[in-house]
Length: 101
Image (cartoon, rainbow, N blue to C red; front, side):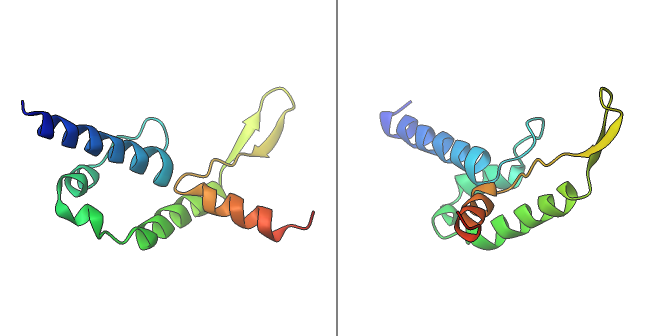
């Protein structure tokens, strides 16, 4: 295996990690999609429009999250749980900037 090919594979694995762990965070049991693998393998990765996909993904999880409720056995009460997948760093930054000190 040529060194150049091995270096390219390392970069692709790094991009896959960045995309799945930072940009498109998902539930830990969810697998990486074929579309993500194909995007990393293609030349389109350098010109891909991430904003639209990130917004769509994050907004989808936000709608799901707002409706989830769980039952706490110790307090015998229904509670809301919030696990925001997608790109939650955007919302964290917006909240820090929007809320007064």
